[in-house]
Image 1 (tube, rainbow, N blue to C red):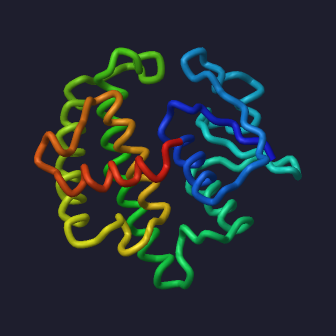
Image 2 (cartoon, rainbow, N blue to C red):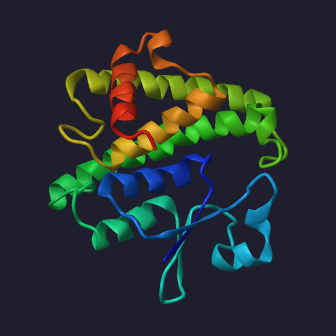
Length: 204
């Protein structure tokens, strides 16, 4: 298998962290230069016509895109340590937590950054700075809610580390770099402590 990735982007980082948590090795990684437009090349569009990373090229010639789908596939191939749930109930609640992190926290951060950061103009045209700023405020509302969740449980989905923690961590690291967001500096001590704990566990 071959993983087409972009190490600085949050979604490819989710897959990389998922693989690290499972100890998965031996998958060739191909870096895609987004700033140079490599994701819009004919070769890459043949893998994913939506021009997004990551993409996992399977040994049978098919290409699997979308971060969650790639992680689900890898979970099936490498079931331990389990990161998506051991039964129907746990799988459902972990997926709920993961979707919340993806569709709220991560999307709000991405929209803020893509519409306010000059370095992302090459990827987002036209940029709408006011929209981006509003998304940054919405992200902080989501982060404050998550801070409250982490006051009563050690991990995003409950009592153990799961894919939901990976999604939330990669989202926050993206915000840390491009939004200069530090939860502890904005009164979110639980979220900051959780972030620091995960960073110590997975430095990739």
